[in-house]
Amino acid sequence: MAQVLEFKLPDLGEGLTEAEIVRWLVQVGDVVAVDQPVVEVETAKAMVEVPCPYGGVVTARFGEEGAELPVGAPLLTVAVGEGAEGHRPAADPGTDGGAARAGEQPGAGERRSEGSGNVLVGYGTSEAPARRRRVRPQGRASGAAAGSGTAGAGTAGSGTAGSGTAGAGPSGAGVPGRANGRVRGAAEPVDGPVPVISPLVRRLARENDLDLRELTGSGPDGLILRADVEYALRAAAAQGGRAARETGPHPDGTVREQALAATAGAAATEPAGVAGSAVSPGDVRIPLKGVRGAVADKLARSRREIPDATCWVDADATELMRARAAMNAASGPKISLVALLARICTAALARFPELNSTVDTQAREIVRFDHVHLGFAAQTDRGLVVPVVRDAHARDAEALTSEFARLTEAARAGRLTPGELTGGTFTLNNYGVFGVDGSTPIVNHPEAAMLGVGRIVPKPWVHEGELAVRQVVQLSLTFDHRVCDGGTAGGFLRYVADCVEQPAVLLRTL
Image (cartoon, rainbow, N blue to C red; front, side, top):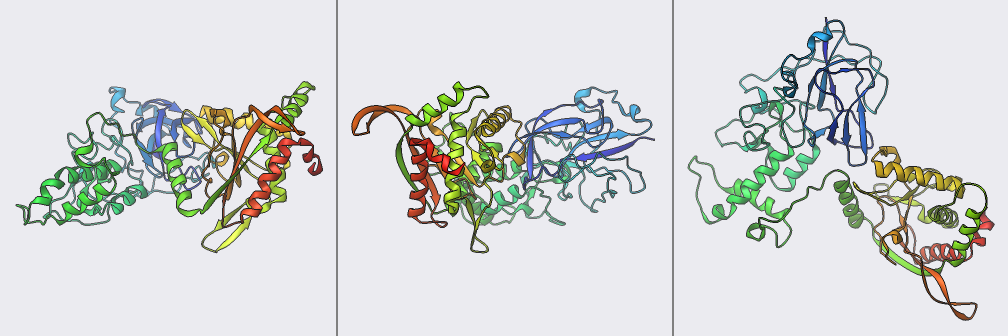
């Protein structure tokens, strides 16, 4: 007899709590093999193809393309074992074949098929752990209108939890936060835990003084989604002007304080000059999510926590360009300019290790690394990413060129793994590719410094006592002033400039 196993969004590592469905790779009724990729998701760090640890027939999918799911939410269900072919849907595939609800799980006595090993962090063991059948609280409505649910029961993004009957609720539940994501009346009881999975949803409500117990979620089993909170805040803001002018209780006896508090919280999230009537119909709102949201959070945190300073210097890069041309004229792979700059960085960090560090604020300690994992800024169609070259200090110019090329190609294709985007100890930012001379870059938290390189252009320069046209570049160093003083930062930058002007200086460290 076939068993229907539920596959949940696994922990993708590095503290990620949610992912957006980019593209489904299977349909309901498809036969999948163990470890076959079934969905492509986008996290705050990278695009990832998620393999399924079960082999069988797909019986349901949860979440439309573009929806955000929290870690632990159902992705799909698979019928495995003898008779699995009987689970192919006879109905229109667009309905996902009348898929089982997200809350339905095999009974405790049902046996599991073998898993696939640790394909991703957090799932894929040789034996799947036994699951318990969910018991719903008495006296509560079931389905999407229920007010209590268990962790991992639904999505954290827009749209319904799945197609067809998967996560479906009353009519109109397909509009998140509108049919079911409403504020409760005062007479409605609130019992059981608040059905929220995503910490982002809790934070949004907390920052806007919104009581989640007063919301009914539009997700499966009443799960409160981000869209529900945002809708409640918009509704409160729209009523805020009228509520602020009126006094006394509502017709149903409730006081307006909560509406006013929600309005104030919603207004606090609007930038000056945008809230209220200042918003015009033609304005466009772009969600800060995925890579763009992760970059925004990281840059804001860097500005909040790191007391940074910037110093800069112009350098004559003529000899560096000649040295590179001589290298590439010889036999062997071509050497990139960024690889030479990276080699200069690692040599400078060996002399000034204070800048290859981080600050442990809890322990009030500076941690100096004994290795250089060099990040480099790469602009892609998905936004700015910072791939990391592991052990850059142990690589020569040829090896650095190869690794930069590999990571850049993976970044543009969206194939970087979380491990290739984290763990950097110092960042090299070549903003000269944008045709600009200088910048004051923001430190890539939790690192302590970043070297910026502007464009290399012909400029008048005094060379050997005479005015000449030379290839000039501006170098800038932004550093965490907690790890060192200006003398150390200036010494580092001066050494980098000396190596750019006289590449032979590097021979002392080879």
